[in-house]
Every structure is written in C-alpha cells, then in structure tokens.
Length: 124
Image (cartoon, rainbow, N blue to C red; front, side, top):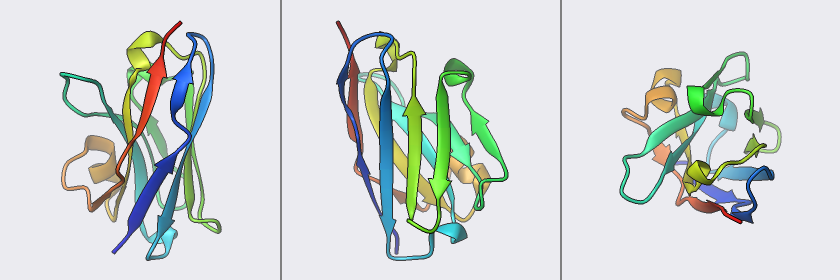
C-alpha cells in the first residue's frame, strides 16, 4: 500500500506560481511512476503531467507545456509540480497518483493509488 498526501495548494493571482508537493509513504517510491491530475468543478478529471520511475521520461498535457514542471525525489519520497504563469482555467483540485505503469499515470486508467487532492484557485 502507498499513501499519498498532497500539499501546497492555495489561492494565487493570475500569472503567479505555486509548487505542489506529494509525500509518499508505505513503499519505495522508485517502484512507481507518478503523475498529477486535476478536476475542475463540473468537469472530468484530466491528466496534467507524468514522470517515470527514475525520472527519465516526463509527459505534459498540451495546456500546461512550458508552464508546469513535474519532478521527483525518490530519496525523499516526494513528487512535485512547479506551476508558473497560472491562469484562472488552472483552478481545480489537483491529485497525485502512483502506479507501476507509466501509461496508467499518463492516462488515468487503472491508477494504483490516489491522493486526497489539494485545491488550487487562480483568481484576482
């Protein structure tokens, strides 16, 4: 079992930055590919970014490319999402995910573990 706890969400003005973190426990993080997803009110959950087990591969949704950066520190069992140039449409609950499969955390299908989410609100 892997427990995932997100932090770092909050209220930020358009154009601002936030850094989300996901603390993992219960297993060795390098066993898992990791990803970030988000869900806005009234919308389906969508994939934001994913990173392979030892960070060789990263993928991003088109709507965050050039603005968000996913990273991981397996020694500290943490996953991060640096979000810059935030827009109001980035407002959502952001979820951390872990899976043995990179495809799972890229698509959201058959993810093994989910965090509880952290709220990000971009508003002036």
